[in-house]
Image (tube, rainbow, N blue to C red):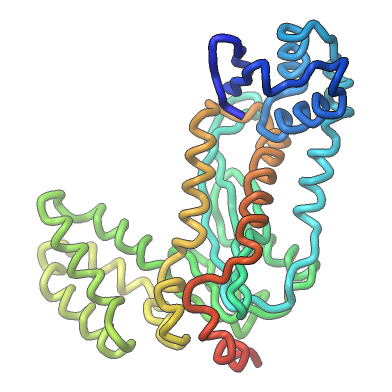
Length: 322
């Protein structure tokens, strides 16, 4: 939706060449499809109306555009209400911040939950916008997933958000939690001099690359002996985290997928890359349509792909459910 050229016009940070919008007299259905696509990409109804009139001389009032684009709003509703699987081996949680206008413009936290089934199929289960990231928000989202059919989760992977473990177990008492080692590494990097950062992070990565939890705990102790006196804050980081080695309770073939929330973070990076082209979303509805279109496409592409290591782990994962 961002192809720009000499014959294009930019509206709301979206550039369209003439060839992307068929002539109304020949392709009314295709034009209305383009209206819906623009709407999903966060362009306002007034901007779409202006764009069509200025480029093609055909007048669509904002209210007409709004009526055409109701299909995009219906897609958002369906995304948030569609049934989900009863069981997920892993659910990842992470938030990314996007600019949205509510009188004034501010960054707000887009909370995202991504699940992988015991068979290795992954999908974005839901997303929700809140002013800031909190454990209560994720709990509310999980309650919504339970209403849509979710019954059991083996493992929840996230950063060390305060109160999250307690909130999870209110909804799923038997769920295990794994702290994301990539988040921990970033936190460590904040407290280390730039000149030593590479060596420190290399030593830290050796901790979660051990073959069992006991060896990993010993490696962490050695790491803190080496760097903890120079950087006392490092000791506090790990003393406050009690779910460092949960991933060792799972089949080794999926360790690389579950000691970090990278499967979700990589997805969110793609979203952030696209939203950089937009200075802001004019309202929450606009953001929802844009994000829904992105994650719907992600789910479509991921539908038949099995996450690495899960195929051989499936029988063991199924046995782990109560």
